[in-house]
Amino acid sequence: MVAEPGDTDDAWAAKQAAYTAALAAHSIAVLQDAEAMAAFDAALEVERQKVDRIAIAGRVPVNVQDGAGIKGIPVHEDDLSMKQYFRAVGRVI
Image 1 (spheres, rainbow, N blue to C red):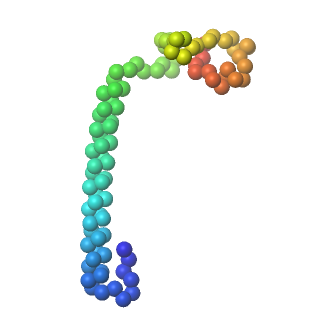
Image 2: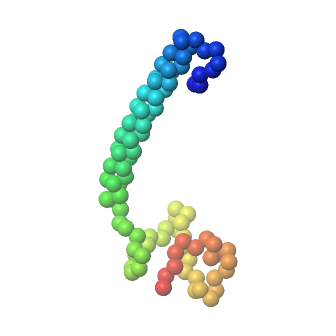
Image 3: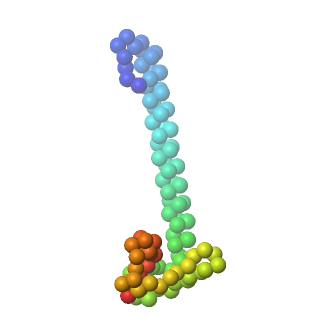
């Protein structure tokens, strides 16, 4: 909303009022976003506390299911095909 040549005082006042309203709406949206993000972070922390962390090194328990469509197949590194390498979900040392 830029002043144009030939704008009247009323037109300029209308543009200022529209800008003020847009700025207020933006400020409200920013506050709502901050509140929503705080609620999300709090809910995320609650859910995060329910799960174990992934170990970088050491032993990690692994569940392998065959009936539900998830299946782990141990393959020696020397026998690993490129297709299997790309589909691998982990490595045991």
